[in-house]
Image (cartoon, rainbow, N blue to C red; front, top):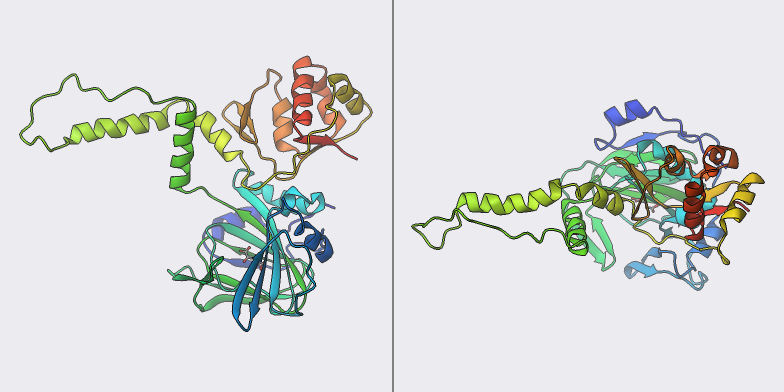
Length: 372
Ligand code: AKG
């Protein structure tokens, strides 16, 4: 199943992206849910899948974390089941991410799917990332407030909410409608009936995440061992003072590392790591190169596993935190741009031994698999 998103991207980027929330009616015409509530519940029973059940009871807000063994105790209203990174585990649901690739793979986080019964929701909250919430089956009322500074509180240790807010958007979404919400805009969704919602999230790293990630790389690669030097040291009036030029030299030692040629490979490795567990299942037994060639010659397409990040920066390609290069122009570009590769697309490259070796390695790592 493929999804066609009716959106005018240039207008959306100029007027809404990171600026204001908007509702787009019938963004997906004749929307068909790629997953059923039962399948979603099944995923929430799996150990590897991150899921939670949020409910509102007479005793207040409750949160339970998956994996769940059953859902028999649930009432008919006031709860939502939320499953993260469904695109990693459910190929049909992952297709819903495709139209949003227009905004870049590196910013895309995951597809969170919620199933809510009447009055189900996680309460008023805000996120630190951009989200497109698509309405699947059922109808849900979405309220979105302005991005004034709003205090957050925890009605349950695992739930961060904001106080009631005045809505700038207050609409009931129907299947195929979408609401886009930039970071920091409070929002809440309440189901009018049993409903499915699909949240396509775009996450941006914070300065502290970047700094700490780069610091880990500096340590792992044993970079930055050169020590501060001061062969022109003079005498000073105040022995306690750190002179401005000394502080500047010390700062330059840090910025020099960031400005060095090590930054680019680190950035590619860092950004190509997925935040959520991947469904990596290396084939047993491993493929031999001639078996890969035979399968391709028979026309079997290759699928990339859901959520695997394949990014390109400068002359490098990064796959799941690892840097790759190839002497065959176009091969890694094909892997980066296409999530399903047919044998014909690979045919210009596959006669190269280095390509076959690299591709076989990636298949044996569990990153790509033959369809079927
Ligand atoms: C979000 O993705 O930010 C949401 O608020 C969705 C929550 C839900 O689907 O209940």
